Image (tube, rainbow, N blue to C red):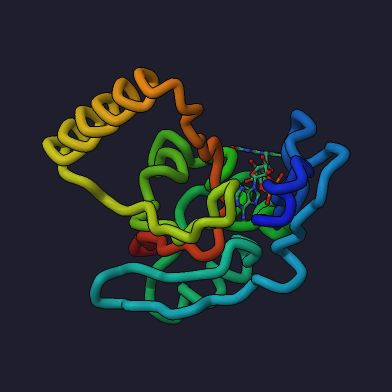
Length: 169
Ligand SMILES: Cc1cc2nc3c(=O)[nH]c(=O)nc-3n(C[C@H](O)[C@H](O)[C@H](O)COP(=O)(O)OP(=O)(O)OC[C@H]3O[C@@H](n4cnc5c(N)ncnc54)[C@H](O)[C@@H]3O)c2cc1C
């Protein structure tokens, strides 16, 4: 990611590639998460959470959850081919959307690689803390504008590992 950022090379993460609007098609370095990062990292039945790599298919994820009486609820039609990272990237849902809603309702935390190569974790924040951070960021932006320094922006993240809330079957 750092190399691509430094050399202005586009990067395109890809899961199952089942998106309907060409999301995983471009001239870019394509990161195929389905090939190497496709496993369950851990299941916590008491907390009803699972930590998994982004290239795991929803079918494989649900096979691992089933013995614990849990399932990952969003069910896009191609669940045997589409993967967790792609499901989060599209905020997917499926035939049971009225009952289970979309992927964002099941996301506890994401360990991500930002466009500049920084690794960080996106997690839950209290609303008050969001307001505080936004105010601090606005102050910093105003200060850097006054110094005429271009701000460094990280526009999107690549998911390296995700923690998911599972649902009782
Ligand atoms: C017949 C058919 C039926 C479908 N039914 C539904 C439906 O009912 N509901 C629905 O919501 N969708 C549906 N879809 C669309 C699609 O299958 C789903 O949205 C699916 O969850 C996408 O998963 P994927 O792994 O194929 O993602 P991909 O197509 O591979 O990627 C989706 C997006 O996520 C990004 N991405 C992938 N992996 C990562 C990662 N690790 N980090 C960051 N970004 C990443 C990609 O760049 C892309 O923008 C359907 C598609 C087909 C062909």
